[in-house]
Image (tube, rainbow, N blue to C red; front, side, top):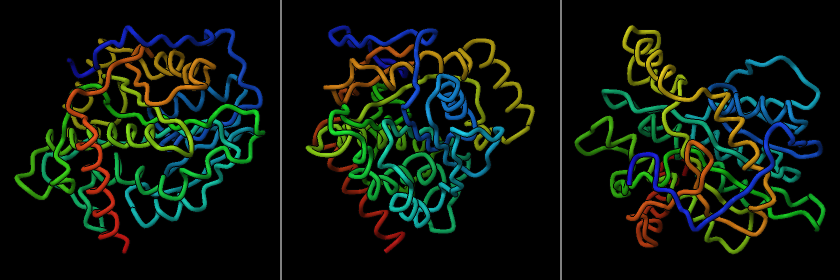
Amino acid sequence: MGAFGTLDRATVVRSTPVERLDLTGKRLTVVGGTNGLGQAIARQALALGAGVTVVGRTLRDAPHKRLRFVQADLSSMSGAVRLGEELPAEDEDVVLFTNGITAAKLREETSEGVERDMAVSYLSRYALLQGLHERIGVNRPTSSPRARVFVMAGPGGDQDGNPADLNALTDYNQNTAHMNTVAANEALTINGANATNGPAYFGLNPGLIKTDIRANYLGAGSFAHKATEALVGLLAQSPQTYARRIVPVLFTHDLNHRTGVMFDRKARPIRPSLGMTPNRVESFMTASDSLLRRVVG
């Protein structure tokens, strides 16, 4: 099993080609939608007629009548909990989490004492969903399909993680810390998919794409950062190409009666990580709850 996952050939998910897709009347919220992949997906959905809400620090797009911006600091767990209670979600068809960074070479903490990558890339999502999960899509017509949550990270990459060290306090290593956020997000997806109420949950593994996600590790604007992103840009798909592939999946009718499906960089179904057992998922959720409660009380 590689970093991009193993194809699940037993699962077939069809979607309307983006050239023929009309999202008029649909609603999408993108947490982390002001930059990178989130921004590209938000723009693509908006261009296809959807109403889009983007959550992030700074809006980088021109005003649009179907675009709503919610400012938020996703490194703050108290802020994420509050946002989960206040963010309008009752009319949403899809909520997508794309917010994320990579861990730094030396361990960094937020003002709340959470390792920074864990805070931004995972725990803020968990915190948001505490108040958001049961409200997503509840005001839509009763005939509407189940609302959906998509969690972007690296599912299917066989990262087991270590829920016992969620805050990266023991023998800090940049790669280990970041892979723990990847594993935690897959556990979050599986846990949500197993819930008996609320929206359906799905995982996204976009693979290697040119964005600013590596800036925290390489140093924003440094030669290493510029050279790495230039190489990635030559070898991998662009955020816009990925958005054209994945936006049809976000709204496809083929997912109306499904939950828990993971998708790779080409929007193909992949298998979950072998080590993400029910006990592993439960351990991650217990550790997440414990860390969040310690931070916000």
